[in-house]
Image (cartoon, rainbow, N blue to C red; front, side, top):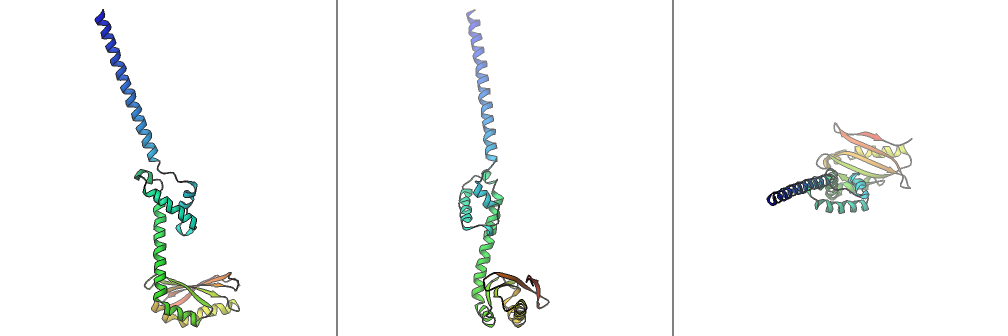
Amino acid sequence: MKKKLIASVLALFTIISFVGCGSQSTSKSQNEKKDTKTSNTGYSPTNDENNVLSKHYYELTDNEKETFKNLENKYDSLSDNDKTSIKDRIEKLRDERKTIEENQKLIKENMQTYADFIKEVESNYPSMKVHDISGKDKAKDLAIDMKLLNNLDATYYECAKLTLDKETRMKEVGIEKIEIFVNDKNGENQGILSFELESGKYKSKINTFSR
C-alpha cells in the first residue's frame, strides 16, 4: 500500500513537471513571435519626420533639413529590420540631396570658368544679369534675370537679339538652352522666355508674357 502511494505521488509529480515545461516552452515561443512581429514593423517616424519624408529634398526648409539630418543619424543606428519601414524614403532624399549638391558644385565651377563670357553678356546687355550656368559639356543651361524694358515687345526683341549676336559664343561655351526671367521694377515676374538650340539655331520655345 505504501509503495503504491509513493508510485502515485511520483507519477503525479512527473505529469506536473511535464505540463510546466510545456507551458514555459509555449510561453517562450509566443514571446519570440511577439518580439519578431514588433521588430518587423520597423521604426515609426514622428509627425515631423513623416512630413519631411513625404517631400522632395529641394522642398525642405532649413528647419526640415535639420530634422532630416537628425533622422539620418537615428536611422544609421537602427537594425536592418527597423530600417525597413523608412529605408526607401531616406534613400530617396539622400539621392536628391546628392544630385543638388553636385549641380551646385558644377554651377560654381561654370561661373568661374566662364566668367569672361558672363561679363561679356552683362556688358553688352545692361538689362540682363546671368543667374547661373548649369549642366556640362554641350548641354548647359544659361539662366538670366532681366529687367523689363519699356514694353514687352522691346523686351522680347532684346532677348532674341542676344540669341543672334551671341550665337557663336554661346555654342563655344556649350549653351543648349537659355531661360530668361523678366521682372518689372518692383521685382515681380512678368514672364519667362526660353530658347533652345536646334539645327544650329536658338529657337524660341516658351513665352509666358501676358499681353
